[in-house]
Every structure is written in structure tokens, then in C-alpha cells.
Length: 352
Image (cartoon, rainbow, N blue to C red; front, side):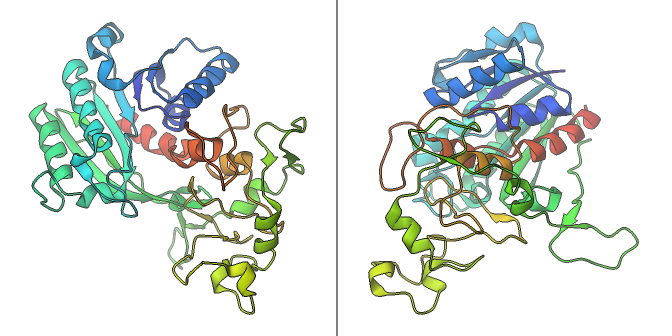
């Protein structure tokens, strides 16, 4: 079955839906480093998907009609709906991009649509300020096209991904409601039922067998496995115990705490060896469970369930600097974990 990828990023949804059994015929993505990453994946896997390195608003959906698209999928920019941002919702041009999905659905009428976004989308206000209005409008537009939408907030850790990442998935099927979200396979707390769920997987399990990372400027021994931790940050994280964070530690000198406050629970945070990672983010990189350094982009990718054959392109930003385009950590943090995409896509195949 044929799939079309919107807002492809570095390919998290793409890899997942392909593992489920779909063939992606094309990608639409405007970030240059994400585009180069998609091209690398295409070359390694000898695929024929066309990559449109352009703003989605410039693309005419009718050019894909001949493919008879079965699945339209994508993760529109989420910053306008995030609970930790300004939440300008539809007043933010990035929030309006969500409705590009409607334009493509109207032009192609695929059998199913799969969208992933932050759970804040469910309560994001519309242009009149009504709480939840943006999401309600999106659902109404799908219904006008004869789609039956279902949605659920999914924690990736409940499906074997070593990361506590809650995102809303919207799946709409054309003309019927045969889709059901998959039941969780893992749980933080174990029960004594006849069919107990597996315990959550730890991030450590996925990254422990990687070699030592190289440093910036050195020849890579493992793709994207590069340590860019500044010496000052390494000193600060040395005060943090496993699973802890800097402002939560006792007896830390003021010269180390600097201007941090008790609210800074995600800054200078070290992962635990026995638990899933917290939600990976682009701005505040978590620290290795045992070493005084940031997680490398490859460790991010392992935790996100990306295959080692995907090689990220573009810069690795030192956390005190800025780059115009998405750096490698952000490419991963903005992506959908391929494994959860595969699990949901398999249920879509059953429905259509």
C-alpha cells in the first residue's frame, strides 16, 4: 500500500510505516538537514521515493493522484500547541500548517490519515480563544470529507520504547470507523493479572553497548556518536547523582548552581540506568547515566528506536550556541519514534 509523508522531519514516521508494510512514495520537508538525512536513508535502502525540499504550502496535492495514496501521514510543527510554549495556536503560522493535512486529504482522499502531535493540541484555543477550539475545528474538517477520526494520547514507554513520551495520535479512516488503537504492552507498575504487562524498558539497555564517543573534530568511529559537552557543563553535571538533576542535589556550591531555580528540573538532568528516559528535547539535552557528558545524537537515536543505518546530517550544536537549521539532537527530539509509528500503522492496515 502506498503512503505519502508530510512534514517528514528526519523520517521517524516514514521508517515506522514502512516497517509496518507501507511504501512511502514521497516526502515533503523544508529543513535542509532533515532533507539530507532523508536522502541518506533513501540511498542506503535503495528506495525510489521522491523528496520535495519545499514549504508544503507550495505543493499541489494533485501531483500524487496517480499513486492512489492509501495512507497520508505526518507530524505538523507542534510549537504553536505545546504546553511549554507561548501557545499561540492558530495565530502562529506553524499552527496553521496542521490544516495543510486537510488540503492534502481533500485532494487525494486516502483510505487513512495518521497525525502525531503534542497532547496540548487537544486543548489549544481557536482564533476566538475557545479552549480546544483548534482541535475541534480540525476534526470537523475531517468529518466534512467523510473521515471518521479517532484519537488517543499514547505514552511511548507503554509500547516498549525506552522513553516516557506522551503524544496525541489522530487516525482517521475514510467512510468507516474500523480502526482501534493498540493496547499497551508495557507498564510502569506490574500487576497480577492473567496476562501481565511487561515492565518499561530502560534507556540504558539501548545505549550501554555503544563504544566511547568521539569528540568534535575527531574522526567518527560510530555515526552521530559525538560528545560536544563543554568542560564547564561536565563540571556541573559531576554534582548530579544518577536519575537526579542539579537543583535537586544537596551541597552544590553557588558557583555551580549559578542562576538556576527550583523550577529547573529538566536542566542538568542525568538519566537513570533502570528507567526509561524522560521525553527527549532539543533545547535541554539529558546527561549520560554514568558519564559526565551530554547524550550523543546516536544515543538519542537509540532511545528513540531509530536504526543505526540512519545517519543524521547537519551540525551538532553546543548547548551554549545557536544554529539556523535543526541540529542533530533537535532532529531526533522532533521526530516520532519509529517503533510506535510501526505499531499504530499495523493497526491501520488491519482497518483498511
